[in-house]
Amino acid sequence: MSPKYSGIIHEPITTLFSSQSTDIEKVVHEEEPNDDDIMVSFVNLQFDPNEENVPDNLIMSRKEFKILNSKINYLLQIQKQVERLVFHSKSYDYEIQKLCNVAKERHELSIDQVTTRKETVDLKIIVLKSDFSE
Image (cartoon, rainbow, N blue to C red; front, side, top):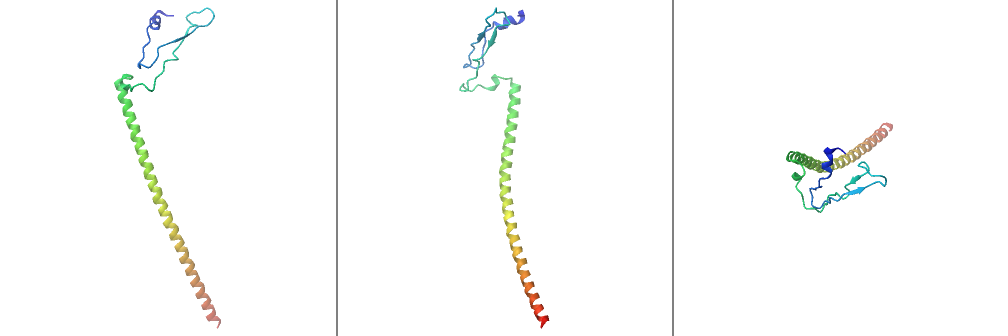
């Protein structure tokens, strides 16, 4: 192992959250151990969701925090716009359905009027034919 990193390995491990464990687990092969055979696993290094709220600016730089906040705000604005558009589309669906019903009623009325006129024309034709035949 290089002398540059050997000092880092022997430093104590610290965490950002009090609920995180710093216990490490060493796995050593049964053969002759050397530096390559020792594996260190941080299995117990976990975040506890019940931990008190830790401000994000303790975890990331202030600039990153501001950028993240601005992006979150932008996404929230987009989400509000989407919800507004969905609401408006539902009201448009109602209006479209109303117009379809009106168009259907008018179509039925016009069909009735055409049928009535056809019957009167047919009746007049029959009367005219009977008049000519006499």
